[in-house]
Length: 103
Image 1 (spheres, rainbow, N blue to C red):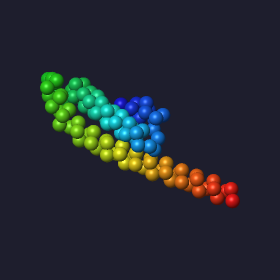
Image 2: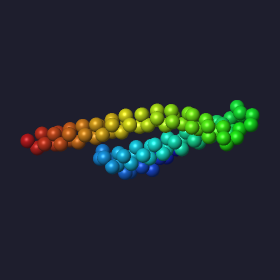
Image 3: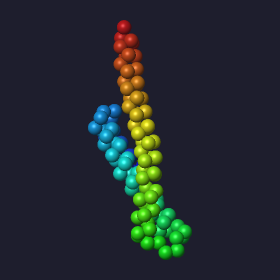
Image 4: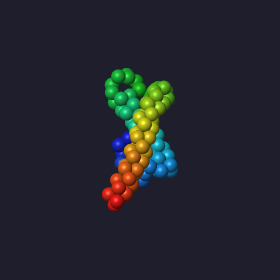
């Protein structure tokens, strides 16, 4: 889910405010869906729980989901900040390097 979300949004990503907000929101949704699929697969198909039922699954989803999503979004936030910084450095270097080559 995380990979697909990033792949779908990658053509829109730029080091500007709204594309970054969009990327963060897509990552948030992707992280939540990723946890739901991963946790659901483990809970329903893992064989660890003798009588799985929806109420227990939803309880576990609410218990562990926020931690997973928060941690994932921490990494995404760091990556987006690094992307902005790298974009600015590359743009600055390109502007200064090309102006120096003309003189």
